[in-house]
Image 1 (cartoon, rainbow, N blue to C red):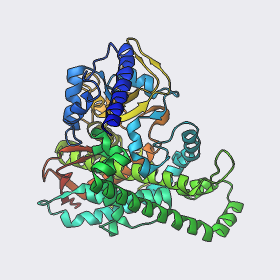
Image 2: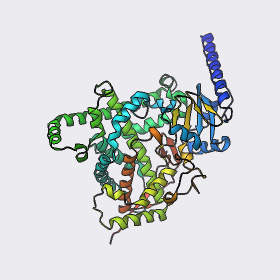
Image 3: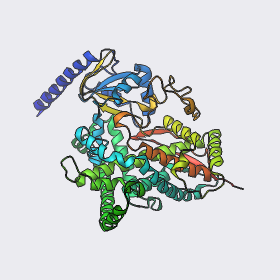
Length: 504
């Protein structure tokens, strides 16, 4: 047995040495984080944790420069904030595969749009893209408006100007209601059920997965089961709860479509432009779509896409909205300027039902959202794996190289954003990106950008309008301490105080 272990380790070290030598030749002009064979990167990773990513990554950039690399479990991982490399990578249609760590989400999201590649990704992107056409997105504003009313009412008990609330919890339920009704066509009333198992399961799962980014053995099922059985069990239980939830949503929508199929046929006979006159849920499209072989999508394909969109449309948007409210609560002047813009446009009518046109008339609101997303991007980094070699001026990235783009650090680049640590919404009135088309990309960019970004932006706009018109946001409660658990969160909560607006 001992001999077998020695042989295995010898083979592993030899293989790593060969791959390391290959990388060293092509990346000789890029700093390497550790030259210690095999275990060097693990020693570095041991100093990192989701609660200190926002501190450690800038330290690495300051020490090694805009691009550096490391070797992790036989993989070459290049980390960058260099706009040249980001431009070349994200604009390319050749490098569409995701970084290997994305596969840590495989048991949860399967082969959904976030994780898939090649023909599978192209097919599903083609199927799903029309459901995010702006004429369809317009119809979701009514849902966002109605669900935001429920959210406003839920905040009333905290609105005494003295106590604070961790707004993330309530926002999570709001965004879950929005994505379920708008994209899935199912009302789940999450805001009226404060102990949603789904929300808790997503938090547990994202915590475990993000720990796996710096402790790679946690991303490998058999190693996780062997070394952390309790964690493995918690992860499996969270996945079970999430899949059970999504399967229930799919069944409910299938039953609804079946029961109302005769009504749909009747409407379609008299409506030549049906998609503009009735809401078309993403889930409906998936249930009715055919694959490249002319066959209906399998139950697993549908579930993978539903899981993907519930995650991306719920957790990321929750973070974006919560941190935007937090930023406004800490910047009274900017909050007042936004309130004055809303007051100028809407007047004192708090019952005004929002529509798509309203959202286009509020330029400062858009600046506030852009600035909050710049300082608090829900996704702090994205990754790609090269499907072919990529030639840069002074180095070559070989096929199979994994690249991590540090979005959070790029969005705080002082060469692009003056006083980058300051909350200055006005900068977006005049901001130019001549040095890089990809310098301000909180939703990623290029062919694999976030397909639902306009959906998310409309949702954020509606929530901010409703909250700011009803409440003044106050700087009460502990300051946010960033924690990057897949999605940007805070170890201390995202806390704000509330005071009702007075309209005389």
